Image 1 (cartoon, protein in one colour):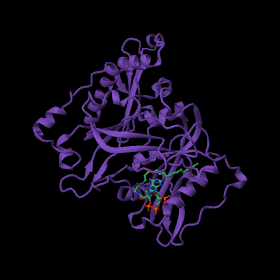
Image 2: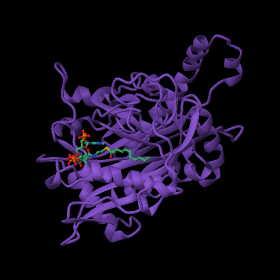
Image 3: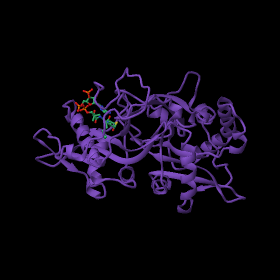
Image 4: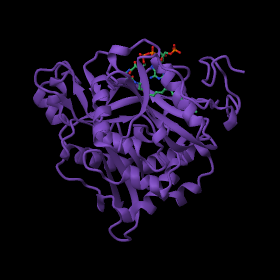
Length: 404
Ligand code: MYA
């Protein structure tokens, strides 16, 4: 038995994938919520209710993740939170709030959503944990472990025993780590907010020129994704995801929910071959602004984040190459130009929607386009974690799962 509970110990060497602890029979799962200190009470947050989603928005916008220098804080919009928390199969019992018993103020939150996730060759129904937040005035009182235990209990009650989550901080023990890359769309504002700096020998005029994008996209047949594209996108998505070692499995309902444009939240585009009318590629990005803390001129940084995409590959030609290494090199070579063109169009569209910066992690095939498209290496990392699943470590570029 591991002495790290259901988490992987930091120095553990893994030979075979599998659960760390066996599933718990329903009659052995604690039936009542874990106790909270007496001044607090559990309260599910009804995210479909305008008043309650506003309370959640306010908790997060004032208390959620900040960068190390406390210059920026994530500012997920209320509409975004609804999108993130109400995917197909969502469960009300996994939108867990903590309120002050006396005045009912919402002071803490944790959430889960269901998702089929493949790790190496095993597909498991998991819970994706996100939006763990404790009001700044209640920090370091060990409330977080109680929230985590409670969401674990409620996940077990649904017959799910594995979880996936991401964090900017290092905890025991990341299964994968990806670095952030940033592409300036509005360099002047990025410098004014302190997000980026004018390098030596660089002037604002030159920086603006360097980051200038064409006003129009260039991929023939590029258009917003529509309902009629769901089937084709789901097929492309799952085929593309098969290349990765940590990847979601999407049903059509998931594609409909996650990829079709919701203005202000997520944008999805497909490429329809002008001749054959088949869908050959797609890409998407989502909006996650940050509050600029204590800045005299700017209050919000509008950041777009690269989300799911898939790019056409010359499968027939590649299948003739027998050596795996050579096949991978030929594939990267074959898709690179196409992917750079698609992502350049994503940047142009993001700029047209008034984003200041376009962020991407070095996962999927992102390393094939970041340099050509003038992304700069960030200093942040995102670590991926699995709960109660022992497995071999995964390289960042073998990650297909994107978490919000
Ligand atoms: S990641 C985003 C996390 N949120 C923020 O960073 C927002 C700003 N910060 C806060 O709100 C608080 O500082 C938080 C901690 C809530 C983070 N993941 O209550 P405490 C451990 C896991 O005294 P506080 C996201 O949402 C820490 O190591 N654990 O501390 C995914 C220490 O444990 P230990 C974390 O500062 C969340 C303990 O908490 C994290 O008041 C995935 C201290 O508790 C973190 N990001 O509150 C959660 N940060 O003593 C795990 C600190 O052991 C899910 N800690 O070192 C696990 C799977 C559950 C489901 C399983 C189903 C089968």
